[in-house]
Length: 430
Image: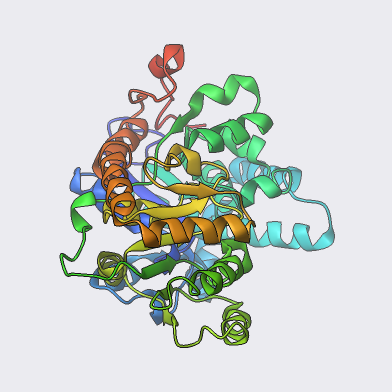
């Protein structure tokens, strides 16, 4: 029976995001696997399909084969007609959903058109969720896929929640109506205190208690040093090849560092829209023989790359709490990153890593020289980073917290006080 009428229906959770599986979102795959290991039935859904470059590992291939793709289904005329018919059979909910979509649209004709697309996607997804006996819908990120999740919930009566990341969503909070999404969600999982505080800016105070800290996490046992002897000169970056990740700053800092450390090597794992520009910068600075472009790698391949590195660098201008930093720290690597957003909740400067001001090439180059020239500093910071991840960012612990929220009770909260004892409403209908 449908969860509206049968409160004893076992939990069957649907996970939704814009693209799944994706190499830049392996933390979602990891979270789903951790929930399944705890006995939760999770069905994955994605708005768009992803290309084979995202399916490098066995887990990714399996995820691609078993995920329900909304746009793909919407392009099937028979499925679309059936979904529309199911929606029209519930006229009150249909009208309420259309009203919600219109009320939460962003200004402009283009935004109104996209809102119509979100309604169509919600119609298709709602029919699928009801036929799959889904009792709760959880979405990652607060932008377009969360708009679809909110509309799907309004149309189907299936409650929804979402994980709020940032920082991009906080650049356009009014466009994406995070106030309305927080108000309607059964709960909101925030990846950091910084993220939660940003949500609190836009959410009404009566909804603050439904916002809980649930870190993205990793499995520390999957990461560690290779044990092979190294000169201590291998620097690794993993992420999108884009200016927002600070890659041009890293290239410039690396070029300076090579004066004192000519044997140093920088490996860039990932790809992106600015790869050619970055390659040109590498050539202009005369670093071509020392900078390696590895392209996309699977989870296992990234772990191997981390095990062979000596220093991990991520000089981003905008981040939430980067999972790749957790992976590097779990690998006993000293990490070098920037003092932005929620990174300070993961990396303590001088203790579990080094942090520098964003956009400061001089500070970045100096910190790189510190790490490359001091094996004892690398070992001390690497060990403390590993301890931090084991105690605060372990996916098994975070999955247990998320399971409690999905079950309708608040986990022991990182906020303390009365909030820690407040029930979230869990799977109750919004």
